[in-house]
Each structure stands twice: as C-alpha cells, then as structure tokens.
Length: 319
Image 1: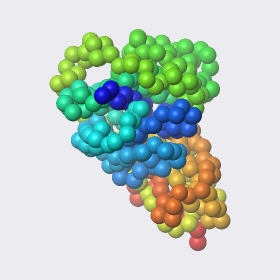
Image 2: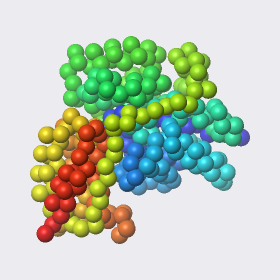
Image 3: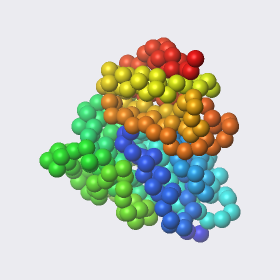
Image 4: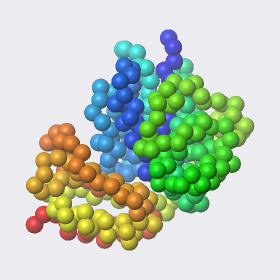
C-alpha cells in the first residue's frame, strides 16, 4: 500500500495559514484530504474558520502540536490510517507558535506513522510585512523559515518591490534552498504546494544534525492566550469601536487576535482578525448550528491584561 503524503502548513501567528488551507479545500481537485488543525489556547477559532468541506477536520486545542499534544497527533494519524477508503493526503495546520522540527520528527521516530505515511513537504507562510519583527523576537519564526521546503511570501501587496527584495534576502540567509512564491491572500496554484515530494531529510540533518534525537523545544513563556466567550448578543458598533481602539493602542503586544461574533440584529456570524495593528472584519455567512452560535474572541500576545480585556469585551454586550 502506498504511503499517505502529509503536508505540514506552518508559519507565525497571522501569516495566513488558514487562508491557504481554505484555498486547498475549496479547489476542485477531486482529492480526499483529512485535516488536522492545532491551536494555542483552550477555545478553538481556526477550526470554525475552516470552510465547510467533505474533508474530515480534527482539532487539537490548548497545547502546541510540537510538544504537549504531539501524542494526540500520533493517535489521530493512527486512527486515520486504520480507516477504510484511501486518503489522497493529510494536511496539518500547526499553531503559529509551533517549531516544525518536532512535528517533522513524528514521521520518522514513530514506527507505525513512518511505515504508513510520508512527509511530503513543510510549507511555511510568511507575513512579508512583519517578518523582520518576527525574526527579532521569535526563534519559532526563524525555525519555520529554516525548515521550509516551500515558502509563501504572503501579503506582498502591503510592501514595495524594494522591501520585498530585502525580505527575500533575509529568508535566503536562513534557508537558501526553499522555493519562494510571492502571494496575496495565499493565492497560488496548488500544484506548487501539494504532492511535491519536497521534504529532504538529508538537508535537514545538514542544518540540524540532532534532528532525529533532540526533543527539547521550549516556548516563549511571555506569550499567552486569552479566550473570551459569551452567549449574549453583542452590540456590533460598540464592539468594532472597542476593538479598533484596542489594536491601535495595544497592537505592539497583540501578536494575533481573532474572533467569531454574534451581533444583535444580524443572522450571520461576524469574523474579526488582526495581526498587531492591521485588522479586518466582516459578516461571512450563516451559523453552522445552534450550539455553534455564540461569540468567542481569542488574543495571543505579550503583557496582556486579562481583566481589562474581559471588561472591555463584556461592555460590548447588548443592553
């Protein structure tokens, strides 16, 4: 039986991984994928932002795939490989704080996984506008670039040609061999991303000689996740005003903000996302179910005041 190809989608918080995943799932390729989504925080947002599709989506929350929930990944993969009906591939979207090395290790150190799957490629989505900042304050961002087989230099519409050239030079200094594609909203021919047979273990061992034996990944303890939820209706105007002021004033510390919200007077769900001070929000479609119909908002960042954030959020509840 041929091995199932696995594509790992990685990249720092807000780079565009879920956008790429949704592009893959909405293309008319006729292939059947299983999807594993990992988030840093107890309330899942990305899983609910994945488009409705025939593919099965498995969610791992409240831990990073490269350390605390790595065993969950092995169990999910084991269950998928025992099912009847051949999968064309498995897509793994890591948390933005994941070091891809321990994830890649999984496909070599676990016997059952190694026998039945093959790591096809590590695809890293890079936020062109914020890469310099990320490389300065996050070793995970550098690891994500270093381990990539394919790099999507995303959000190029926010940068000048000279700035993009400088960003690519920084990427090349870390990873001289990865294929780089410039993209807006991860728009790319999927043949450039999937089924590439691009992962090269020998290249990785040249960079990380202890790749198959080390297991000492640590996260930045200054980064934490705050999850806010309510089943009461929110005042849309009040929420947008509060959120805009928040990202304007605290954007430096807010690495990533994302939420799915229920506003009074609207039947559709409102999705808001922000990376530092860049934000966007819009009504995206109907609620998936009655149980799904509630507001949740996640902040990931440094120096976060949970009490102040909770008070601001609750002040937006419709009187």
